[in-house]
Image 1 (spheres, rainbow, N blue to C red):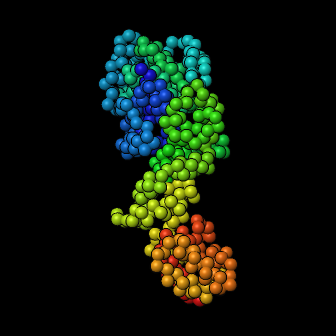
Image 2 (tube, helix red, strand yellow):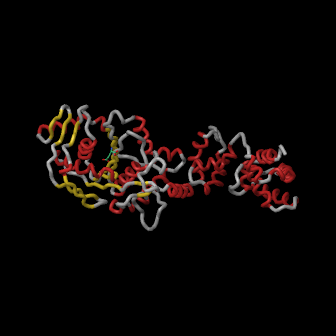
Image 3 (cartoon, rainbow, N blue to C red):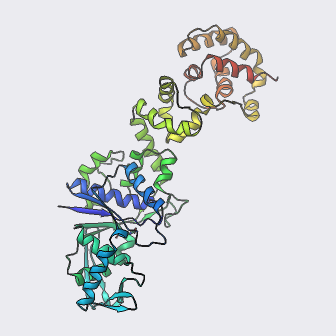
Length: 426
Ligand code: GLU
């Protein structure tokens, strides 16, 4: 049975890099009918925090990366102690105070990496290794090796930053008499500035992307492109399709560049692929959080709004920026915009339109358009002369989807009210 693991330390939130490691492990397991183990490496009792454990588990669930088994290293201290004692008894380790230290036997160490092929190390550089610290807790490498062996991990897939730990860990496998797993070290993720990924260049928590209104499908899709490609120039892929073509050997050695615009573009594509109903369901919590929707709302009306804006948004939060004018109680157009669109000079035109719209019974976009065109003709104007100022007066924005659809969504009362307000104090 092929078994892989993702082993985050809960000393911080799950970031993009960790999520990519989790995803590649998960995809590798699914592509090979194997199992995916989640192991919380919480041996550092000072820096590990329960809120980080919760956040890691929630982010994993949100990304859709279900695990087959879950372990916490803090519950396994007796096991590490047992193996440390064994090494002491066999004289492969010695004590320094309360600490247990592995004797290093100088030798050449070779690791076979599925992505990088053979890597050779000279152990003369490696000093004797602490296995158990004097406070009774295991070191990262010792707990990692004991667990990877006992959990029967067949391939360790992790970030390139762990390559330097691998020879030390191989020596621990050797001392314990365990067969080492295969290794695959994933390329670094760098920012657009070609430096280490930072907060500014995208190294934020997965939960931040969730709060910003990215879809989990979009994030997962973008993460899988960081070092791997589904082939055939394909970029927008669903997870189940990607699994079918996933191969660890096809992962690049070269660093991957995190491109926020690309992530947004991928997310936009996944938003377009959603049905209006599903997208509406995802938007409701964002609208409620912002105070735009209460517990009870008109679902059909909301779906109509979503339908009109679906093609324009790249995140769920974008939707709120586009449609705020439909939900806010206090609506006002900035004086700058009013000036720019010379709304003060349109009092007569706006008043006529108000009167005509008052007569529309069924305030749908076709009826609104008919009335609007008749009014424009009566005024001896062109439609374009009024469309833009009216859009500004009704939405506070200079761009948007069709004006008549927008008016229909806003409704008769608010449309007429806003046209009146726009020219009131002039
Ligand atoms: N807890 C380690 C980390 O978060 C795991 C490294 C490994 O996968 O071996 O980096």
